[in-house]
Length: 121
Image (tube, rainbow, N blue to C red; front, side, top):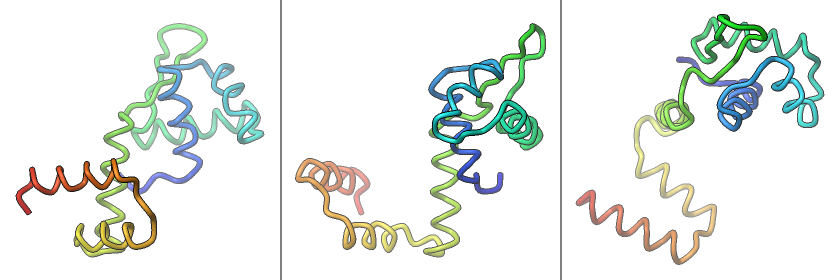
């Protein structure tokens, strides 16, 4: 699967939140954030179905659209793609870069320590 575009993330996020929507419901849900028309939303859904990102239940009317992939599956694929492209697979370098640039809470620090201890790294 290729990287998801920002717009594909927007559509999937709305579908994950709803669990499944009609075209009208999804257009309304996206209108405030995107300003997209019904035709624009339908174009995205059709293209995303072809990519295996959206499933369309055509047994009833109106059709029901849902995300074909889970949120965590998409996140994992995006993380792996980013790691390969930007840090040639060096997860430690990626984590170190984030920690140098962003403060973490004491609770996050403790959770990270626990995770590293459990991994026996």
